[in-house]
Length: 393
Image 1 (tube, one colour):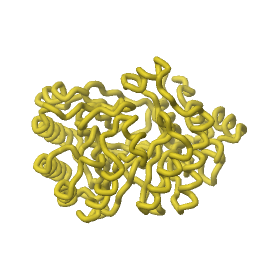
Image 2 (cartoon, one colour):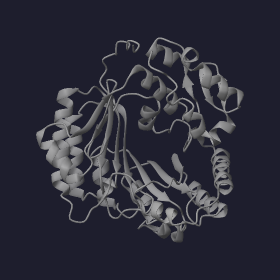
Image 3 (cartoon, helix red, strand yellow):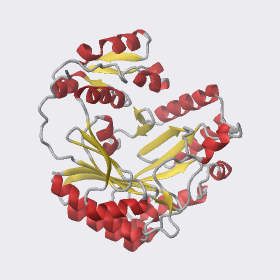
Image 4 (cartoon, one colour):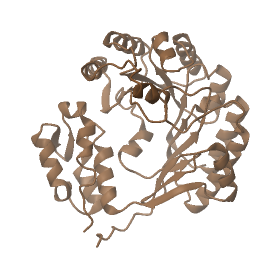
């Protein structure tokens, strides 16, 4: 018989994720829920999103919102008037914002101009994350990006002109035909921008992508594992030397400039998830919305556009706590675990904890556990140790 779940503290989510699924084109590595913009019913989608916001806040009224994140797709493909409408609806249904709210929006260089960025700033956006990926045009072409390096500099300049200073860029490593020297050049050019935040991700070849098709045919010239590991070690050292804190496996920030919205996920806290294919987590219930644009629009006319919902058991919540929490370089907190579940981390996970500490991949801290310097390099292997270890009692 399953252990009785502790009484939940009824606290409204303080974080909102909103999905805009449109893109100018589909990148070769992308398996996100996104659709090429041409001929899409954008305004109908935004109206459906407004309906979902209305149904959502009726079901679970919002409290004071601390973070909002608009992802995609490429949210900045919205035209200025569409962007204005969208941001107005966000403010209508989630009106109570913390004084220091972090309101982030993803953007692609080449899809933003001064007018659009000004509309974003006016609508409350105060943090923009640009998907740069690399500073070599031949690499960008090779992964299906439509921007070039000139677009990067122009976009950042326009963002600053619009009054947006909390800026981040994404880079990637392990790309086809990418060398350690090429990554090093990208990191150098990125650091010259002196931004508060950088996300640097390793390429994963996902199913239902062009890269996966090429990989299956042995036509994808990827760096080998040794070179990819060399790239990761190189970028970690470069970021550290430049004064950036690696606060999560793929994220680096100046002190105090971490992505507070993403910390919501890594701390396994509640958040609203809105839009086609969006995931949400409210009151130990996870949901995923229907994915297609038109199916989402139709479903939102009738109520919450859910594809599936699932109650998360106490055991699953404990495993999630460990897996996502260990992504943060500060690690997981024993006191926070005990406050949430009424038992200690050691009581529940003594086996995998002992194994990973003994292997030198986890370090004990004053209040929990964190990845060791070696563990950071093999994070996925560590996380896997906490999946499915709890049998139903």
